[in-house]
Image (tube, rainbow, N blue to C red; front, top):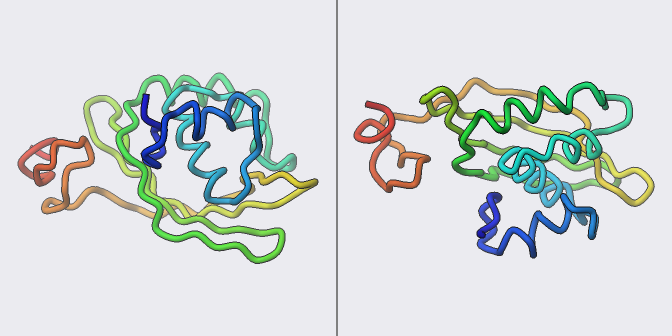
Length: 150
C-alpha cells in the first residue's frame, strides 16, 4: 500500500514506521505527514501522543478516530516547511471527503522539539475550498467542476 502522505513510498517504509513507533520523525514536515497518514488509517492514539503535552487530551482519541474513520482522505499538499532551532512551521492542505462533500483543511502548524522528539503544538486555520478549475482532489485528473464539484 502506498503511503497516504503522498511520498510515493510504501506505508510501512514511510509513515507506518512512525505511527507504529519503530522510529521518530526527524523533521516537523515528516511529523506532519505522519499525522495526516494517522488520520487516513484512524490512528487516534498516535495523533494524541504526538501533540505537545500542554495541548494533549487523551479523551480526544475517540473523537479523532470517529472523524478519521468517517472521512475518505484524498490528498495532502505541503505548501511550505521551515525549521529554526527547536521550532518548526509547516503549512499544508489536507483534502478529504466527508458526507459526500470534498473538504479542505488548510493549516499553518507550529511544531516543537522536546527531548529529541517533534510534537505538534498549535495551528492557524484558513478558510479554503477547492477551486472550480482546480484538478479534483479525488484523483480523477478532471477539473473539480466537472467531477466532485458538480
